Image (cartoon, rainbow, N blue to C red; front, top):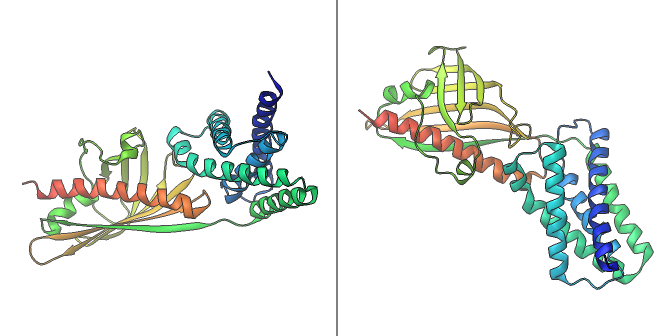
Length: 301
């Protein structure tokens, strides 16, 4: 192995060792180690890029070569995450663009500061990144959001209500690309009864079950249920908690019903400006699959 190749190898190893060491440190000092914070997806990947370019500082690195090295670094990190953090494939797919962008950004920053050969600048920038990492690890993290979707059903509320509380198994193929890729989709809902306090189950395609309790039962108008237990799926669960669901029925007065689906959830992954895009998309497509099935059942005579 020649010297540039050896430097690359050392850069890959060191970058990932630093990343996993810092992730371990963050879990030790965080108030809630189950949360995945901003620093783990932004600061640490940037430091990975900086560490790699430090090992390559004696060589000229083109932007194209740096982009390829960032892809390799990102791939190694993803493989290690799958092996040691037990992350699911779809979850790793979701996080990959974010990691790649900041590993590359760190590499570009590292190439710039090491070319200047200014040790004061080098130490200052790296120290600032480490300070941001510690500050974020010690900060509180809490984020909740609500997603709402609406469809019109050509049936009166009384007919729609029959399929809102519980609906038979949905065997139609999934339209959403993440469901097609293997993410579990909702297929059936059961209830022990049509009354306040009744237990309800939302069953997903892989057999996972969300246990629910009806907390508002206003016949033909409002069904609200709290999630009392949800499965720990490595793809999504553990990164998001579904807190509550709701179906509102509005009589349009022309033998049609407006069905409104609401879901409340809490995210445990940051930054929210990135992950909430995915959370909203997934929640919305869970809504639509259920609501379109209710529409089909209600309109079928």
